[in-house]
Image 1: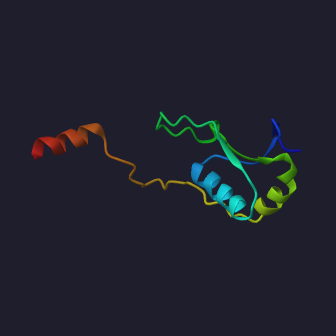
Image 2: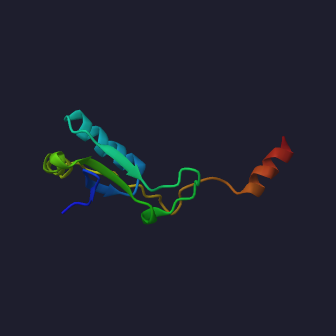
Image 3: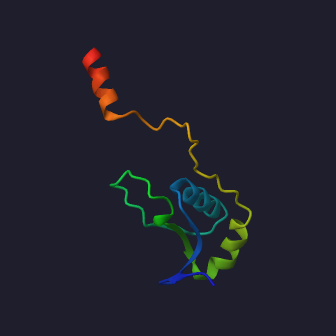
Length: 100
């Protein structure tokens, strides 16, 4: 059974905002009202992975319809390769500033 919060049922729990928005958009396009409940701290840009969940909620009476819709949604993952450049070090930026 899905978690129920004040008449709303959790249809799906994800870790990334783009996944939640994809699900929400799909539900909305098929006429299922929904809301996103995020436990992510938007003031902190540090990624904490699975420690902060994002829940997509639907009215309790729409739960089964939403579950049927969600089972067919392919969610993109958010993985960085080991060699991905996610930004330089601060001292690199200072060196570049001094050169210009």
